[in-house]
Image 1 (cartoon, rainbow, N blue to C red):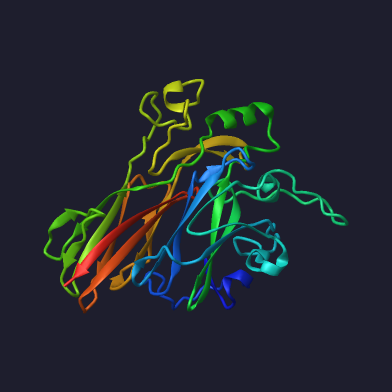
Image 2: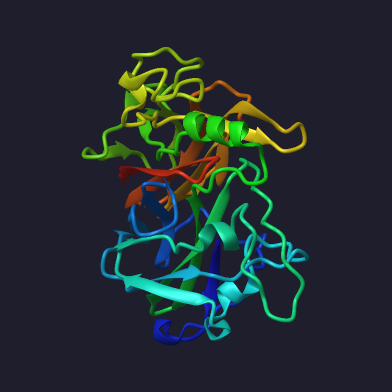
Length: 348
């Protein structure tokens, strides 16, 4: 989520997001944060496990590493009546609910210890003079996230981007046996990765693109693009190198001693609150497509959690004038993991 602010970043004034349906989000011209990559993408709150945050900032010239960035944790709970993903206070510096934790394109931070009470299944902190609050509902993937706000300054104004850091909180309000089983079988998310980018030229020639080698195309040429990710195991087998939801350290130390994950659409354990049972789900995958010039056919593509495909395609048409163009594919899984693939194109 992005928003345009009107004050310098040091005195950032943030507002709620109202989507502009006429905006071409796929064409990158002014400095923008295209992605935030957290490593690891899912952590338990507190000082034990820090997170490395890295922002992909780009404009019409390509990747930018000289744009000032400021990072905040938002500590405001979303009101029950709020339709947006986070509280409006996350977009207001004067709300007192933003805690800055770093500046620059890459920062290290720990998730506040109160995150599972503010944004998870634990009872929220009491507020004097108000009745006890209720825990936050899980998102569509069954998990919980804390808002991370990123501000980027440029000569055209300031953009503000929302990244939601997934937090590992366990289950609350369930039997001890169910809670123990969940803690043994649930494995933290791993960031996805674009394994292969296949490009089909207008002539029908098919090539596997390399990030280090630009491809040359004619002006106006249309390219078919397909980004593939690792096909994760459809079932668990001890020794396959992936610690799946039907495995634990007790049942398969070879895979689960270090909780080996998969950088594709992972299977993961989810708690069905309506049926009060544990179930195995598969991550959906989404790709946001960006280019500095030319025309991307679809801004978003992907596969649902019931789709076993391990690739998603799109098309891009080169501009009518010679240019050096950069394309980015930002791959996101259902649990908040992010991966980025880049393609350089010389239009001649």
